[in-house]
Length: 341
Image 1 (spheres, rainbow, N blue to C red):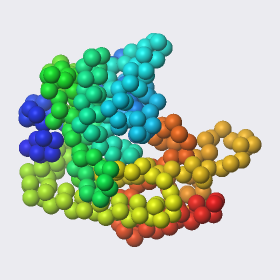
Image 2 (cartoon, rainbow, N blue to C red):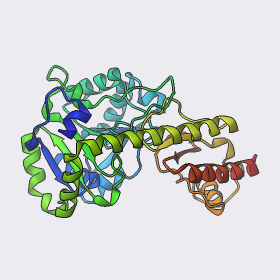
Image 3 (cartoon, rainbow, N blue to C red):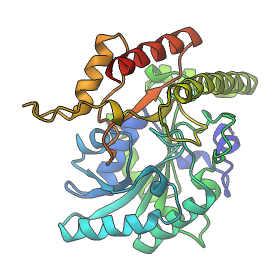
Image 4 (cartoon, one colour):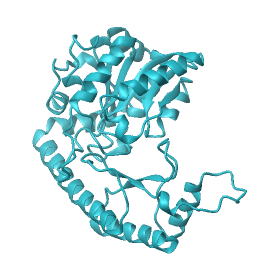
């Protein structure tokens, strides 16, 4: 019931179409093992959550193949042209692309994909017979940001008709860690109509199974629909408030960031004006690491070079904190930046 209410699929999700595992990371590892061979690739746009390389690569040996996109290009319907180029280049290098991966709502930008863009991606995957993996782990973390550029969340399952794509090619990831603030619970879900894929995943599930305690806790939560509604509503209000505090502070300080965010815990910010200008250093690390170290020295952390963007100087700022913690973190970050101006 929860997934059908949340994702609004065209065809209701049946219980046998859901595989429960020990988190979305486990699901990613299983998909890498079942959909591809070692050395094969999964197509993804830039910027992207950096740990997918580990999720799909450590056990399965599958590589992420990045389409060279800006944020604006990644969310436009024309992104399929970039995917075509990346697909062609990968095949020329002998890399077989087995799937395309989306994160919707998106990490690190906090944006949602438009219906038009999702439709073009579905058609692209069907054209090339690529599996489409849609990570929708932030589906309940969509809030009213007040941003006029924000796009409403649309699940891939609400668009996946046979006219657009073979339903057996569409696979959705979901989990408890983000929507229910329970990363330690390690409870993830794969939703797919593909029976052979479900059979293959179930065959290796004993290596990635969720604990009985986690399943019991998760079931208890989802059976209490009043709790789910109230918790989700409170979470969305808190995220909206924190987002507005963070973005208003960034705007006041003249720090550029990706507009249109309305989901997740983060804002993608441009700190390129503050990167070290001295290119004579013998350091082999990207300049973002030097800036990140200054943040650490000041008692605030922004992870450098995690999102595989193709433009230097962009960082993911996580704003999902209590107001006093958020304001203090922003104060420390801005203090570092002002010292470099």
